[in-house]
Image (cartoon, rainbow, N blue to C red; front, side, top):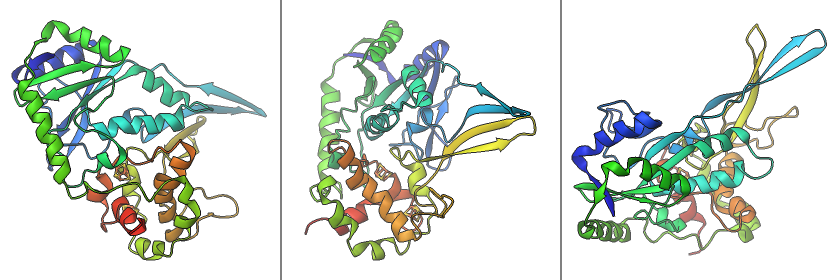
Amino acid sequence: MLKISAEKINELFDKIASQQTLYIPVDRGDKCAEFKKYESGMTLSKALNTVRSAKDFFFPQTENLAEFRLSGKTIEVKDIRKESEDFVVFGVRACDAKSFEILDSVFLSEPVDSFYKNRREHGTIVTMACTRPEETCFCTTFGINPTVPGGDASVYFDGESYFFVPFTEKGKAFVASISDMLEDGDVTKLSEVQAKAREIMTRLPLANLTTDSFGGERLMEHFSSEKWAELSEACIGCGTCTFVCPTCQCYDIRDFDTGHGIKRFRCWDSCMYSDFTKMAHGNPRTSQLERFRQRFMHKLVYHPSNHEGEFGCVGCGRCLSKCPVSLNIVKVMKALEDK
Ligand code: SF4
Ligand code: SF4
């Protein structure tokens, strides 16, 4: 297997960044990590995952969609779409890599979202296998193997070297572009590291959580559960869980008068907000209970119902660590599961 020693990883990043834009996870200084555009000398974070997921690269928090100019009764529409440049996102974890399949099933089905598609075509996802999963991780509940993270190419770290394995055409082109810096490496230690990671997964607090009680066929039963009232009682509707979630994909579209024309933009929205999907007659979900129920029903029931059993959660654990009142999908699953 092709590898590069850990001491040379920045030389490798310099080479990648000389060919195309590179993003890597770096420490923010508050014990959290975030993806940043690589600049020479930046240090790859050792954190398990970033606070915000890699979905931002393909579905950014805000973006302009079109511009309009009014002249009498004539409206001039300006198509402002631009071809994205090639870029690499390095260090994506297995859960976030899986989230792209979920986002693809939404944005790439008809009518195709051309903004998202353009970025997906130009972005190469280089995943990083997990070696030390944390207590909030439960990706295995959704059939994800964190030691085999997928993407266009994967990187495995054995403590001394980074090993590269390409999967897709983009991944093969990526590894070919850096092959002059890679050498053949012995994977004995890597196999031990992976075995240890798998063993850690079996001992995590959520290792036995299953999706057995969920899916499209349980729609009315779960929707009508009396447990939603107690489950949602503490929710303050802040939307944090939706903004950190790699699979949440709701957005709003608005027009802004710049004084020189109209800009149409979209921005992330949250089903937890009281003005979400507000129409002329008001909001169809008038209580926080209904909004809270919507988010979790979507992930555990509606999405699998509409996507051949695929759940809308990847078990990344972000909502477990970031909700200010300690609500999360695991609490919902445990409350609603068959005892
Ligand atoms: S619902 Fe929570 S655990 Fe599941 S993908 Fe979203 S943030 Fe991660
Ligand atoms: S579940 Fe938690 S993070 Fe999500 S909206 Fe409610 S209070 Fe905020």
